[in-house]
Image 1 (cartoon, rainbow, N blue to C red):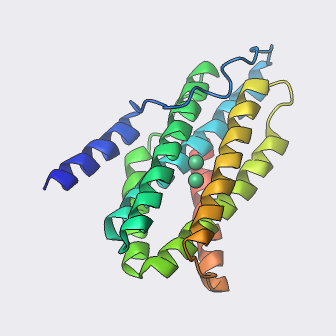
Image 2 (image 1 turned 120 degrees about the vertical axis):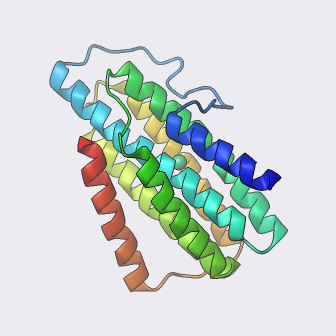
Length: 205
Ligand SMILES: [Fe+2]
Ligand SMILES: [Fe+2]
């Protein structure tokens, strides 16, 4: 019961956007450059997509940690989830600075990802970590795409995205260390499709 309350509290904080970062934002000491109206809107929308990605990461990790079998697996998932909380807070802050707003569909993204994470956990640790490693790999690729798409003058956003990408690479490596298998191609494809839907919708809503 206690566990349920803690998890529910975490979910609520993620969705409502009152998550505190443990590490200071990578944008902290970077000057705010002049950015024209249009590229600024574009950057804010890209950060909304990333913020939704982090909402999904919270929910996936939570779902996975809830159903993971080995205690060290659960520990690694909880540690990564805490770093994802930093990402969540950094990207929310950057959206605000750019004058944008987070996705209106956050509760929906959260619920869907939680269910997927819990299902992955039920398949056992090997597949749970395979799913995690593949998720992190796709997120890394996606963030690389954003670094190409972001306005070059928006150095603050770029610093946040770069730091997130470095963390995701570490999360992937730790999932592999914990014995992740390789996901079959159809599963990888399904994940790509799901994230395509998410990124397309979240860019707008
Ligand atoms: Fe993240
Ligand atoms: Fe991650």
